[in-house]
Image 1 (cartoon, helix red, strand yellow):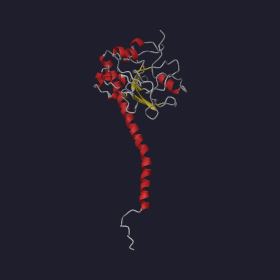
Image 2 (image 1 turned 60 degrees about the vertical axis):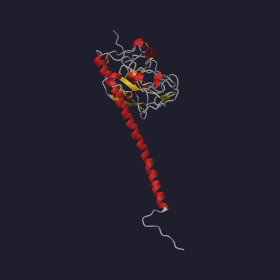
Image 3 (image 1 turned 120 degrees about the vertical axis):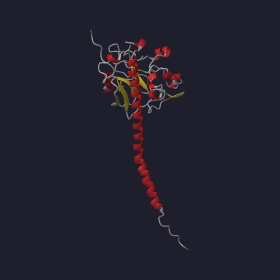
Image 4 (image 1 turned 135 degrees about the vertical axis):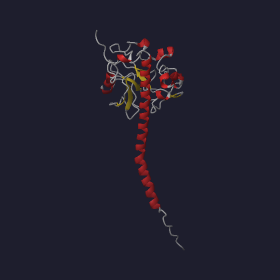
Length: 263
């Protein structure tokens, strides 16, 4: 019987298995790096979106005698539809979850060339019953005109009605990623003397959230505590909660407003 010799340059089975094993090892090493690169790309896109919102806020003030845009709660947003963004979001089938017109009819939209993508963080994958939600960002409740909510929740703090009212614009945030469990209107509010989260910042970017400040700069702030970095729960985690520690809560409080001066 004639034994057929392997042709020159052919791989043996052992060599093929070694090559496959090397490829698998390289893939295992590269995949986390690729995921990290994608996450960073989404974080940069989020930064760009929140930067555009902040620029629109400043342009609005420039054209309206320094007055900041309306920043209403749920009921006034629904009744008047004169807010910076006119949608109310939930986990159910509300029109505001998916109707882009509620964004393009908002007061900031003309300064955004009617773009709707800027209202969304690309890392926000929250999906309501009627589809992916269209807004991830909220506005500091003490920035802008809150209408009938003026002085209701934090009477001890200054409400900034004009851009020039903000004494330290590099320290006061305007827009932020809001956690998918608490986002509804565009009015990010906590009762800052109660030491309890009602609205929670998001942590889409490796445990950090993006915020824009009144001077225009963007900050990616990493939250210290695990209960601040909690994952979103479809339907919402439910209710307010006391922070596990003061670090994140106090940081947000210090960057929200300043106490009123006693006359």
